[in-house]
Length: 171
Image (cartoon, rainbow, N blue to C red; front, side, top):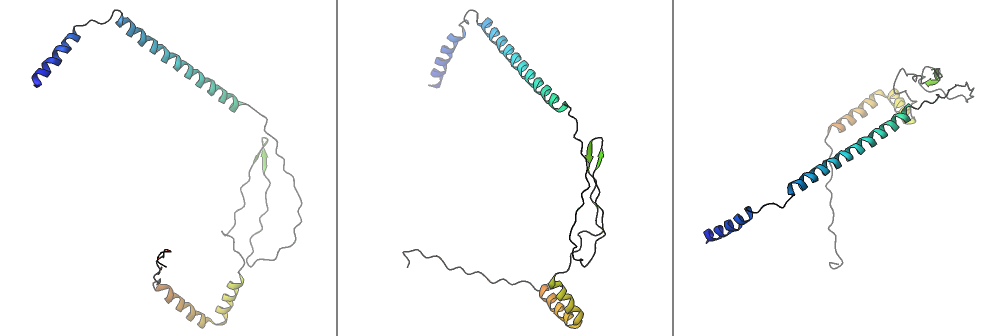
């Protein structure tokens, strides 16, 4: 059965192989290939032209020269009320003005502290703890020893018990 079918298909295809292409087919195919190439060239030329125009516009915008604004510093006197003295004093640092060089203000680096972060005054709780340690050093040592022992022990967390939800039908 397969042999008959194979012979039938081979016979039908043999008739197609002998057919000649239509007149001018080769010329039509070559003309279409040539038109497709010329379209690609035109598209490439447009893309290149638009890219160059955009680059020229960007360069023109960037290269536009404007005179730099002149920055002038003004000394202003400020009166501030006296502040309460902190426990630890910081060295007095005199603020500097920005230097004007060639019409542009160049920032001056900020002053650096001798200690960072700057010390802050003791809170009321910290002062009370210091007073306790100075007043009763043995008792403070005993209290802190107990706290160290507690800190070394593992933390115990009680298990969470959640009651199951009930629907309206179960009630």
